[in-house]
Amino acid sequence: MTWHFPGLVLFAYLLGSVPAGLVVARALGAPDPRLWGSGNLGTANVYRALGLQAALLTFLGDAGKGTAPVLLARHWLAPHGGAWPEAGVAVVAAAAVLGHVFPLYLRFEGGKGVATSFGVVLAVAPGAALNLLLVYFLALAWTRTFSLSALLCAWLLPVAVGLFCDSKVYLLLAGFLSGLILICHRDNLERLFKGEEPRL
Image (cartoon, rainbow, N blue to C red; front, side, top):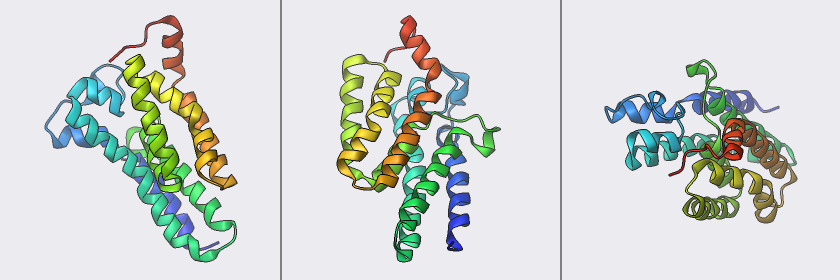
């Protein structure tokens, strides 16, 4: 095992734990987004609470938490060859998303993993990420419901990665991220079935 790996996993988790929505709100001198709507620090709730600019910055921050550690892992682990680099990258990617969902800095009460998972997929399978982004915005325009758009992309995530990437390891990673996102949206699913989910 390369000595880089434990540090990469820890870095990914700690970076993933950084609450981008809260950082953006404080940088803009805006109220804490957790006091509004769903109380979540994700892009959708930041948009409802603070507007488009804050939401875009939050999305970029959360996505970057997934992309940055994965790119570092791919760079540092690639020289080891074989199946090790992909498996190591997948673990680092999972750590970043788990940091977002269970952040150390917020008593393990975090977001739902959508933007950070997008950042991960952007690093390992850019074609899949861009197509999922297109699906998200088309679904949002049609349904005007953030959570339904995110759920649709979560369901399609393994399919998209399978189509645009030959790695079985990254396909397993996509399945893990898909399941995690769906679990994190269980309350949204319940509200959708009841017709109570907020619309844009």
